[in-house]
Length: 539
Image (cartoon, rainbow, N blue to C red; front, side, top):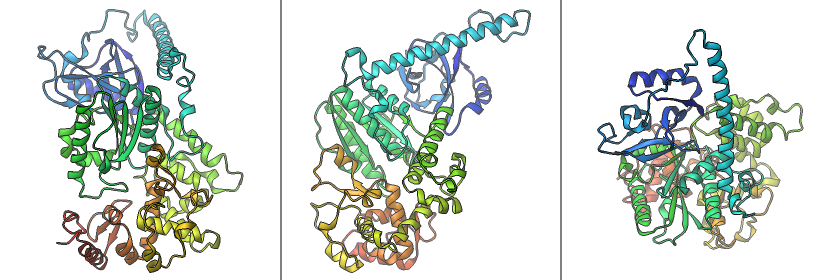
């Protein structure tokens, strides 16, 4: 959030903290007060997410509103000689350049010139607003490529967003910031960060697709465990699923470090390849010490957790348009809902964008959701109830099969033994991805869509990991043994914790019987050694 253009920034801890306290009400979430120069030396106060700045570099604000960096003349003793957080830049006066107030009229001076000062302040404010508008238009036109006269490149960003409901609401400014960052020749990778359900994947995919379209590059998507050994020049790659596709699996640190090394080697060997890392902000915070050697890969951040008035307004608008406006029932309980209510439930660990979209897709959840303010419980109960509905029983059985297997693909061998053991009444040929009811829950994996995989080879999964988690909870509550005996091992490692182990909102607890059953299964399949670091696994 832009607070205003000023003449100088505070250069002591006391002055910085005093100024931050004065602006505290205008920051929110994980965004904190910053005062930085821009690329032409002007000073700006803004509320943004902290960034880690490397030794010998200074943070600056770009016209897109995010933090970039520039090198500092190390012969100046006031240049940073260690890595530091961006909101500690006051320690390094060289980063501010000329940083003394001019001897112009002080518009805050309470004397006979105060009236003139106020007038000047108003005029300056108007000029700044006009300048910001003109700058925005310039940046927007530069991004859309209108100066090139290309009709294709000239499409508005909003027209490039998916039609209908996306997985979560995406703010165009984050997409624009990501593209603008990647356009910097010195930036080879960006990290899109956010809490679970805060549009990390949706935002990353839009940056990927639109950057590739603008630059006429190829694009590729993959999980961090599936990074290709080689990649063509002029390709942008989005890597997701870090530390576990559904949740933290507690034993993937080495795999994550290996993936980071692979990406770094890929960038070293190529000239025109760029990388988007989409990662949960809480997992990066948890494991940041293990990734310190890969800070270059994660240096340029697009943080989706920061709050400001514009983001709140966007979410409020989306909430109204997707939940309240389409409902024609004047007595529906959704009429009493407010977005503030969504912020205070038991599900506060789930991002607001995902909450809004889930309620929009499954409007019938509203009464049960209001009862407990627990989206996981409401949707899990909804999935459990499907089996009692004769018209939905077919969909319910496919939900169970895909939850246990983790995915469905026509090219994979259909697990007839599982179908028999679990008592399902489905066959491989009965799967229909175009069925209206099926599409409410299941769709082709996004990376397969992006990579133009055929319908025969494609994998079909739940439209969001949270929907999978709700299906998992539904089955676990009904039959723990079914899950521990038949569910895919990755999901169990990510979502089940042994009794006595602290569980998060999306995790479940397993008693000794369930843990022993799972360990017997691991031993039968020679997997104990592979997962020996997990608290569920007994050596």
